[in-house]
Length: 434
Length: 170
Image (cartoon, rainbow over all chains, first blue to last red; front, side, top):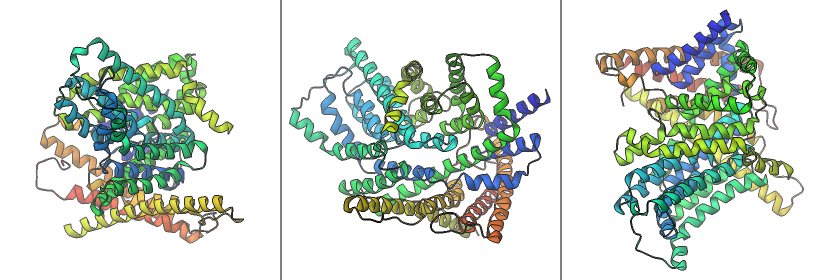
């Protein structure tokens, strides 16, 4: 009985510290220290130092700053200008018209950048003014941008999958490859949704007068070809197994520097901006990961995750029921916490429960990322909403309302991968078979 | 004093950035070496000795050396939902409380990281790779980063003593 009280006290402490505005890394560390103090006689300080050190120098984690740097360089390399010019000529006649530029542009940028906020900012900066000047309905411009930018989390390279992989000791290469098909599934769901919208309400979509010959279309897209090659090179080399994610990331950085140089965007100040930006972002994540690493060790001492798993087990829930309950829980949690914090808290506390329920941790990683994607577009804390608010100067609730259909599509995708888990697992298992 | 402290944060941030780019160059060089081995089929595989170890240690040093710089540039994540509903005066108190909590935690961690580093130095702990790297070297940078981080938090806590405004507003 007293254990339940202590456990509740610990969780309340964690959420109190977070709510107070203590930096996430510190809140996790302190909760971990308190847990060890209450439940064990283990020496807190020495274990803390050993864990911080042990969790911060892994080879796999080195992929994190490199992929962030690659995205930072590319987002400063006039990539987004080419994106609109390269995609728009192909899409003028498709139902849903140029709104598909948002979806495809985000999907392509997602494949070079691991962050959804960066994806929203980069694509939105270019597409929102263009689409606005062509009189596309504002709600749909915002909705497609907010929804599609969440793809940045799932389509590899994905920062959040690196975090999950490091925290749960899963292969990051396998997680990346597992994200490919669900990512494509989401892209097609978004595109079909906008296509149907275009068929049902053609009056909402402005006329696209300009028509292009095939050659003109190809010419417009030729600037996109290097990017597509870069994407295929990065993902392909990981899939074939000739490069680890860290190798692919390092080469990706060098190639994106070359690409930026060709586009005439490479300068000393641009490079320093990109490098310092990447340093900050990866430090922010490493800090949270270090705190989460200590919390995980401490949780091992307290036995809370084991007890939680045993307690959940007494309900005899089916996997579906458990996942449904978890989805609701994550959506609520995601309303208040950023995606990385949600993932590290999950891995520190809920992972034993997942394994006890017989859920594949690889599949669960992809599931978790899609649920976290949903939290990017739910108020009050949705990072994509903030980014888009900066671009269009509309009320955050209006933006959230415009993004709501995409929230439902993401929920549908969670259902689809639950019923057909092969969408997640087939590519990684082919990779193993090689 | 102000100038020196800012210089300290920026210098440690710059070192962190250099380390990240060093990882990039090191790993790329190894990839090129792999390619050369594959193409020319040299009997001995070209390897940069212990490059994975070095990458990891660079990463650890970078992550911790960047803590203070990231902190001063408002890069660390925290939940502002509740705080943003407070009046400036209350925000001021809450910020000071939060900074105090952070400062105590950071100093505590720094102290134990110093002990770990000293221990590694005294016992001569080394990595197991081809090149045996003394562990106290990367650990020293982790400790140093934590120390500068602690200084930056205390610096923020103490600086605007006489104002009634929120301490941490951008």
